[in-house]
Image 1 (tube, rainbow, N blue to C red):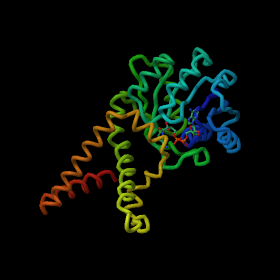
Image 2: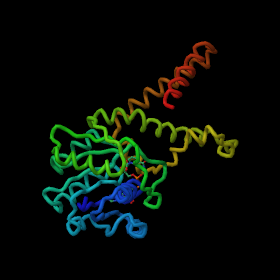
Image 3: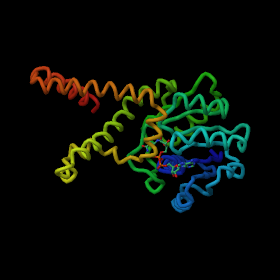
Amino acid sequence: MSFSLLIIGVGFMGGSFALALRKGGFEGKIYGIDINQETIEKAKELGVIEEGGIELSKTKDFSPDFVVLASPVRTFRKIAKEIKPFLKENAIITDLGSVKGKLVYDLESIFGNRFVGSHPIAGTEKSGVIHSVPDLFEGKKVVITPTNRTDPEALEKVKHLWNITGGVVEFMNPDVHDWVFGAVSHLPHAVAFALIDALIEMSDEVDLFKYPGAGFKDFTRIAASDPIMWRDIFLENKENVLKAVDTYIASLQRLRNLISSDREEELTEYLKEAKQRRLSLG
Ligand code: NAD
């Protein structure tokens, strides 16, 4: 494939996408734009991009066939409006953002039917281009969120790009996406951040962070994720995140009641059911 591609936001995900395309045999030019000049230099040094810059107007010089938005999700709308005048008419735009829903429809209203939303279900708590890896997407689900406006050719090409990276494509409605990932991804991150916050609160007399067990470390690994990226995800998927948090609070309250009233049998059932569900994940 010798199309050219521009990544906007050359961090961990954007960098990994570029490396994965190269590994899969993508032969076209890969350009990058980032707000941080050092990131651009590092990305060139690591062979993630060939050329780059910090001005969105560079889009005009690069004249890309594909654009991939890979910065925090709340930057997408502004970037989209700024680059739109610089794009070729047949350019295809996609993104790697963790939130879809309204954002997809807003981007579609800026870019038209050649915008195709996508969300790779792969990642870690690490951020920055220095952590980019070429095999991040291999065998991992990639959720693509077409709408009834999406151009079939653009959809097919975005799917093809993901196939090159080794990702396994699945289609989902943008709103369903936000409900699903609000529950299985955004809620656990919120809980991990809140658990650390609770321990900070409880660390008045004794510094509890001196005694982290393996369970605590496992459970809170994702609280080391990038704050700006997660601020954007929580705010962009606010409605679903709030519903998920409320459901979680109710469940925690149920657990609290079972403990406070010594309801041994019911408490065992609550724990047993959770254990079974967790084991079924493998
Ligand atoms: P990251 O912090 O590693 O990279 C983000 C990059 O965007 C940085 O280099 C930053 O300088 C740049 N940036 C920030 N604002 C910008 C702007 N206005 N214009 C241009 N560049 C800008 O974060 P990441 O983990 O690579 O996440 C990027 C995107 O991928 C996010 O939208 C996130 O929701 C999504 N995502 C992340 C993961 C994950 O596990 N990290 C998984 C799936 C999807």
